[in-house]
Image 1 (cartoon, rainbow, N blue to C red):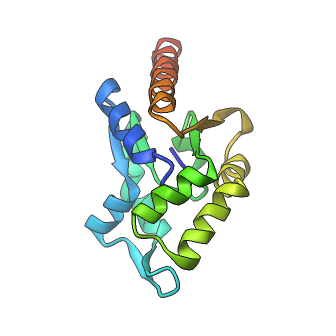
Image 2 (cartoon, rainbow, N blue to C red; image 1 turned 30 degrees about the horizontal axis):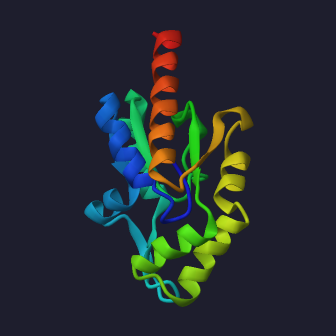
Length: 164
């Protein structure tokens, strides 16, 4: 699951894990726990993710399957890990308000909203994975959340039938 910060990946991912029994991994939390960073970004006031160490850390877990990955980007994860990639999308006003309520300001706030406007995460996913496995889902309202959960659960059930 990918998308600009604030689009609802964590809410959707945790609820999806609860409903399906799949394992949920928040890459930000994983990196924090294992200190999988490669310096600090002064401009954005956040640690810089060491993508290679994250991939190494997740390799065994991903080989077993049944894992929901939650991170704003996805293009550094190996293609073999995923059968489907969902990119959550949120309208700019909602996203702005969500990020502002998280304490985002200035350049960090503007760049994240621009990232959403220009579909940056979606385009990165389309370049990194087969087009047919990348799907955009709207994530503006509680109704969108419920619809997305139902749609993904259905997809998982169908995939399990087809592949077991």
